[in-house]
Length: 367
Image 1: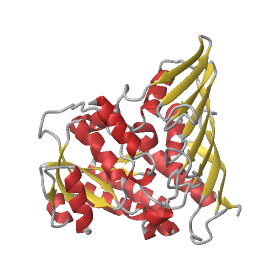
Image 2 (image 1 turned 120 degrees about the horizontal axis):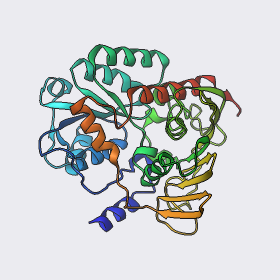
Image 3 (image 1 turned 180 degrees about the vertical axis):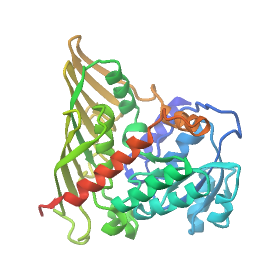
Image 4 (image 1 turned 180 degrees about the horizontal axis):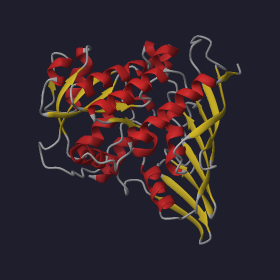
């Protein structure tokens, strides 16, 4: 079964928008104990979000999107899901404990506010919002309702090498992390993208969008609670047909504990690469360093999830593909049931969102 899952992941690796990792079922609850629903299918990440939750024991009762074809496709992928007539049918169902959504980025907060007001936890695709005004509304709603506004920062929580690297950091393998460098290249595939993807007021800009992954990893690996965006830049180097698209962005941040970050994100993955992006993260610690090669080991192996570690014990390579799993989803389910914060704290989820919006707002356009 594991071989089939690995092959399934490999087959879809050319398309980042619809990349939906699958793992081994590791339920943390009994059948029917955690019922969820889905609203908004604007981004393909919803499939990865739901894969993770279902593998952890969730049952999807409903799906709703104004596009019937999208709902039909979703129901084929997740057998037994009912197509709801509208949002109200889902929001009013007391059996539903959490609602997952991948709306247009600028509309994710508004959906989240409706979900929280209905007394349910919310799990949204990244970026979870596009403005600081939305952030304040989300924070207020969380305080008022006591419900969760969780975020699918998939490049850490749904990548086995990233999960394993976190375990190594926690064990002290490289000492205190003092710098995080991230590269988040993506393949554009413009012909397959929806119109909203190229409208800045809809997708939020490259640093808000895919930059959110990078900033969240900085906070996590370097144990940063707050940070300052020292400088950020955006450009449209080679896509004049889409003038509102940032095809390049980078930023420098300094954490409240002195740790630093540099990251680069772009839409320049060449067609010759076997995956949608050669995502990598570099961690420098006081006692060693680590490289996470998430999706491919270029020109060596087409397998993903490689971790390279150098410390006082020597040089080590860990191939963790299919060996680690995705504990976030089971932790999230138990957090919702027990009102704990083991998967991710609300403060962490919102701080990453805040910093990616600030990085975008402060960005200097260099081309």
